Image (cartoon, rainbow, N blue to C red; front, side, top):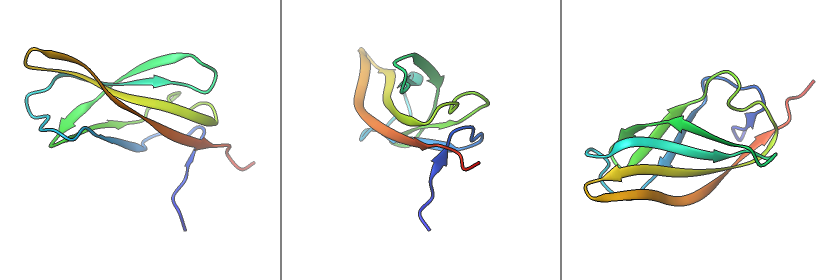
Length: 93
């Protein structure tokens, strides 16, 4: 069975591949655009070439497509990576 992410889930690990060594990255974060157009910033941890975040209460409060984008500073560079989509399904009631 395919693992799905549902509205209201807490403790879900999200990983964004950045394609470069992130060991020296500063201020790693994941910018999030929610289905209703509001934005959030989630503090991330750098692990190898990835940014990792574990969802907390309220992070996935709505179903729909969430757009995620890695953000960090690396040396003189400060910016964002490519955007990814996260589908959050409506919880079965």
